[in-house]
Length: 170
Image 1 (cartoon, helix red, strand yellow):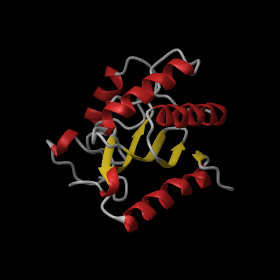
Image 2 (cartoon, rainbow, N blue to C red):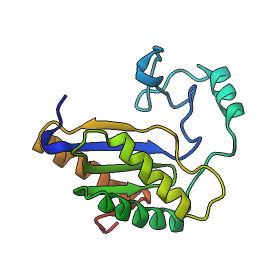
Image 3 (cartoon, one colour):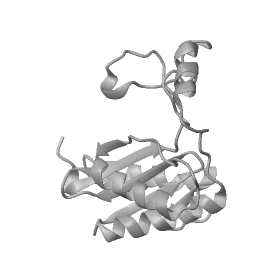
Image 4 (cartoon, helix red, strand yellow):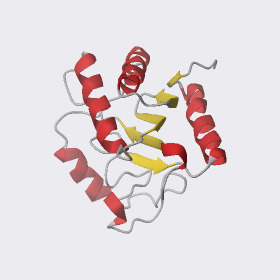
């Protein structure tokens, strides 16, 4: 799908906070493996427990949960980095374990730019381990209504304790 005016809603997690086999539900890359349930309708307890344990055992360090201070610091770094790439930004949210960005990506390769932003942020924050999950989801925005819904959804993360840009009150 060609995005409306080059807009994409990208989101991802901090390192180790949503793994294959997660009891909240999960998805394999490109849906190569069929998985019952998702975060809205989780699978029955114990489903994929072995896979989840295996995924945890493969981790190089503990899962990363950002403090409120680090969320605010990361938000400032992300916004500066996105502006450095001359992207139009509508909303950014950085929470303790996940993030969202609504921005234009004229080259239609948002994952590459987001990867650079995550790398830059990791170097700027003084956390001596991986901060961000390797991959992210980037959904093309279909139309102005979709843009409004995505922006509203991202900004509502302030009520979950996320640092958001532009600033909104809790």
